Image (tube, rainbow, N blue to C red; front, side, top):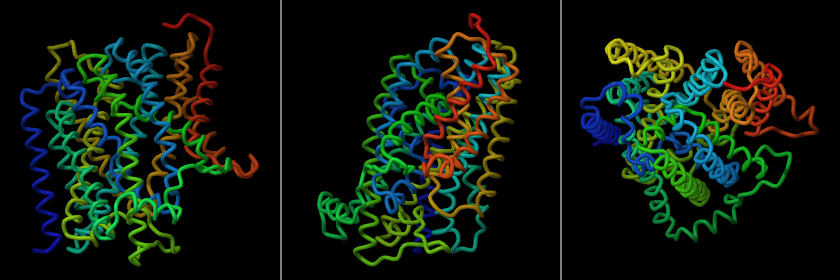
Length: 491
């Protein structure tokens, strides 16, 4: 049987497994189950499932591929994540549980006003819609290149199929379903990485330690970039990692909605702290995978895919080698990619729907007589966001060249910066902001940050901004809100 057909069969079987989970979890699921998982999610399940949601197709592809140019310099960023998760567990989660929030941006309405709430929600929607769609794009891109392209199927067809399937299995159960499907998807994602490493070790007749030693000789395992002007200088990476986690997890409705589905604050805190430690181990696994892939290519003369400028395409390293090793590694790789794509998109669609319904339409869950109307609106909103998601995936096709992970963090730096500034100002000052000025502040500051990043080499003596542009953006927003505020006791 042709490899493409085997892969297609495995994809169908895996999708059927997800729909089986959906059927079991979505029975008698109402709006509370969709938005909050009935606040009954077991924290170990959420912690394990969040690995898949956090890693996504970008980590699955771009972290191993990034080793080609950057070695293990991604690792300091991961260490910063641990600091960020600690802040989330001790500062943000107690706030969210105290206020009994469904959408975390409702805090901004209580602290500043409706304009601030909608501004924060809009920045999340833009950032998540773009970021998550690009993560899903990478999955569709790889499957198209290695499976569907051989059949002459256009790129948009697998994109439509993926989004339609995700829409179907999240349509009823929402968060209640996603908590359990994420657990399944994390398993397949990690299995793909582990199986590929083992296959390479057998092919090269090496132990893991022996392979890492040889990779180190090639400079593939360098962890710390010590050039302070470099965008991946290790202290910048650690600091950026902490704030990326605070913003992209702690101030992100998608990630926090799963945490808020836990039974108690203590359970949610256990979930976050456990996830942070697991995240270090898993990212180290993917970096080791990258070193193994690249050393294998160098040792065997395997030709890596290059772009028009002759540069190796990092996002194609993993699939190229996986498909060349054996049919088994190819199938496992595809299942891992599918799992990464599903886990990235399903929670995002639910979170986008939640944010729009609660922060723009101000759903009232206590109004039992209005539940039928709210359910209709929720389902329509879910479909609209799925269509927007699809449009972003298709529109990005001509612009994909190198690794997407830097592109995603660039987007995050400009869209999550205002959220960082708003929450910091709200939590650590007692000043009252003029609510109507908040949207202007939150638009101007990312623009100024972008101009600064583009011109930093000329203006700052060769300094190049990396992910820390997020901090600059947040700081500018903080001072912008300070100017637009007055000395009064906050509400």
